[in-house]
Length: 459
Image (cartoon, rainbow, N blue to C red; front, side, top):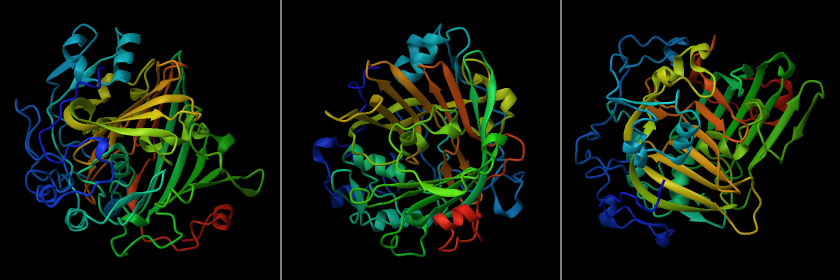
């Protein structure tokens, strides 16, 4: 698609990368909470009414929400829109009518699978809702954050969306990297690989333990020399990978300190520092298709690519995808592509960010393009181009409004490898015994250490 023909929304906050690192003006700040939502989205609906105004979002759970973990929350999430029917379906037959509302990766799926792939479009619901203190912090501290260094790193920000009025692609991507999540959480997830013949294999079942000090509102800032984000992934299936663990750290001062990763394999009985777990190294737990810098849409340093904020645009994207989160994998994982029956699409305004490989840098991908939800800063859709300019990877991140601690989150991914003709369905909550993610008590300081990784950790 032609990314130069962007619908630029008429607010003072929509500026391009030429004004990089400029702090928001008082006039711009005054729009937060008035014409803009506290996180920087346009509060009003669109001209033809197909995108409604934001009214605060979906902030409370339906009465029939009964998660497996009880009061802790998590899955299964009740679909508040289960009774709705699609407004229309985009198929190969009528694709020309909607082509400008779809990303290049999705257009490639239509090209490859015209007889089976489709996009079912439902009424738009702007469900994103967050704790009030998230809004308060974002507005009160809006002048504090700044980008530093060439990577760049993030300084002066804590427990807030750092750049609700982004001036360039780096600021927008930092918003996505540190979007709100529970500071201490745990959950289970499963990932599957569907090959070109339709064969389905379980690539991993994992327990995830996650700490995000950036969103610990009891702190004034992330402690010096501490990662703002730490994660341990413990694999239980398949049997050949049982007991394998990975631990990963991300830092705010990424311009000074690289992300860190460790791996523990039971047969080797030692913890190994894994500096290769970054950039275009392939993650084995995904079945060999997900790159480390594609985790959560994007992960790691922004030093290999130039990130450009292209603009804001109305696009068809997966949204309020409760069914995709909870469906049985046997129903979801159909040959060639995800079962279109399970993926809900809506029309939303998104920020478009394009990353182009810098001269002299090496990476399997030449271009990365991201669609960031204006209401939540979640990366909803991402696709990449290879060195020949062909679509390489396409990722959807099905997302929902979680209830127990209100937040719009994208805990699942559907990743297409166009070169291999395969796709992966990861972090699926509908697999047997999957709990989803729920809040836990703070982890002890010793929990996210290499010694604890080998010993299993002690809560």
